[in-house]
Image (cartoon, rainbow, N blue to C red; front, side, top):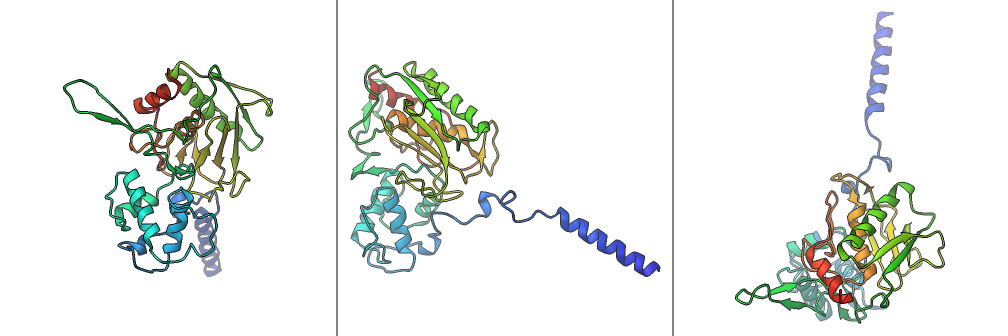
Length: 312
């Protein structure tokens, strides 16, 4: 009898302990444990022109996604040969992000490519938006030149003169608890520019900015890729679309090392909505990459870019 009772108690204790162990459900899995959406290029470290190695095709797809290659289709292009075009694309990428420009896939470049980022390409229609309009200015006649990192989209599109009051509309995919992050982001841009104002509208047809959360291919030509890859994208003026990846782990109103700060990402994408391209300055809001658990605000370089674009 005592033996049976002891056995029953042991079974109940074991069951209780098992219930305490987190499952591998979607609610408990963080972005750290998920595979890299951009692929794992670690095994390609040191790969260079003239070599053929399994996985180079994925590297080509990555660089093509962000404009460094100009492959309209996969036919004959996404092979594993490290050719002249790939070397040139690598050098441009490395130059844009102030890496050692070698054209070789080194460890520093691999680490950069693995980071989550904005989905807006760095090169659009063959124009390197990160290099097309660098500005130099004097801080003082006797001091060295400094370089402004802000850039614009090709052709410097902007909202028309006099169009300073922009309306935004949330589609049904936007969680209600996410909306305050968008409102705060728009208010910040309004405050620092003293030029734009933003207000919500319920009329989707007349709205200047349309906001939504989406998964995978959502019909705008820039598909999302699941947790930890492309976080969001904002379209240039006057297209006015702002989409966030619904599969990311977002935080609103607080920082968590495993979650992306929604307000920071929306601030960045609003910069695109106003006409800013990507910056090469790591501290700038318009820098393309953002890790989880990090918050940023509008920096002086970002503000100077808006002032230059709109002659404020």
